[in-house]
Image (tube, rainbow, N blue to C red):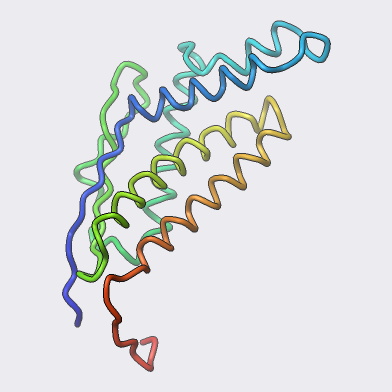
Length: 170
C-alpha cells in the first residue's frame, strides 16, 4: 500500500459567510429598478438578516457534508469530530476537512484544493439561496459548484512524479 499524507484544510465560516453575503448583495444591487420591486431586491440581499442567516448556515453545513461525501476516497475518518456543526447564527466556527493523499501530491495543489473547497461551499449555498428567488442565478451557481468539485478532484490527482498504476481496480 502506498504511503499517504494527512492534510488538514480549515475553512473559516466567517469568510464563507462574507463571500456569500457579498455576492448576494451585488446580485440584488445590479438588478434594474424597472425589472424588480424593492422587496424582491431586498429578499435577494437578505442573507445577513437573522432569518436568512439561519437558512444560509444550515445550507452551508449541508454543503460541507456533501463535499466530505464526494471526497470519500480521500477521507479515512469515521466521524467529523473536529467539525463544529451548528445553525446558531452567532457561532462562527470553522469547517475542518481532513484528507489523506498520496505523498506525491504537491503543496500548491493542496492550496488549490483549499481554494476550490471554499468556492464550492459558497457556490452551493448561493445555488440553494437562488433556488427560491432567482432561477437563472441558481443554474449559474450550480454549474460553478460542479466546476469547483471537479477542480478539487483534479488537484488531488495531480502528482509531482510518475506513479505506477495497478492493473486491477480492486
